Length: 120
Length: 279
Image (cartoon, rainbow over all chains, first blue to last red; front, side, top):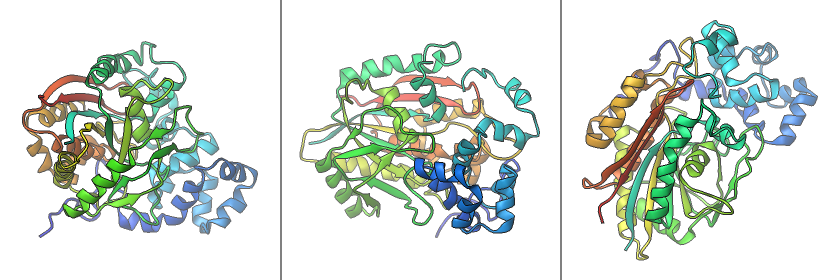
């Protein structure tokens, strides 16, 4: 008899949990981001972002989220945060900048809430 | 006969690696974290483990969701440093212990843990940050390593209790090793953090301190928590703490706590606890 570890669709502090449903939905986005672990792929993304997205079969909606650097939208579309961080690296959006946006704050406002923002 | 001599629970936050590489260990913001590991390295130098079993999770450096193992064990004579998306860190490659890894894999599978055996593995911050926090590595690492990778990204994850039991099975594997190897085991990750949504960056220092108490005195109470209960206490990404239970499960009831530290400067509770088995 298996125990219920996570109720289907349960949200934690207003966040979706990355489960099999999310992983299936975001597969193309995550696969594209996964490629960015390799330096030649990072160069290819920077050289021609549109071709790069097409190569991984992103839908028009998904492409729009990437074009807009809409990381909250990408998360909702099934992107996994650890893979989106790789997209953040090539587009100049660090994790804390992404996080500030998710909180609805500016980067400076976010840093002001930290105990020691020197630890970045 | 093999013997587990020490267990360590530690966070593996990537920014620790960045601070280390940029020589910021002594800055006011980072000193409270790095200073806590100085006595740990001295202690490990005295204990002289031959092998460290590093229980960690990959963050998309080597594993992808096309095929995603619940537990994966390194079974090679060396492990390369992975590129996670911002280049390869300047660290010596990781030396494996092929014979011990093969014994460990055999023992775990016959003990009914159906792990994925990996003859090539590239390791990243989840593995590397604890390595360089715990071990001096110039010119080379003083210890061979076995990476044990755990799925904490894509639910369903292994239960907390399953992780504790994996630790117990690892202990049996070490004890049944014919060589007189001295083994340290490290459970990595956490502590509290939340990297998505409006609560991005929320930490729960009181829950983290409570976890540090319980991992020492009452790990059973942690093994009984569901993932949902753990994520409410420690945040969605704080679920990494299940990996500390693998480490704790590998220790006997006689293990004594040696070090403890906690620091929560930015977005992740950074915890440290060490245990030593009595000779």
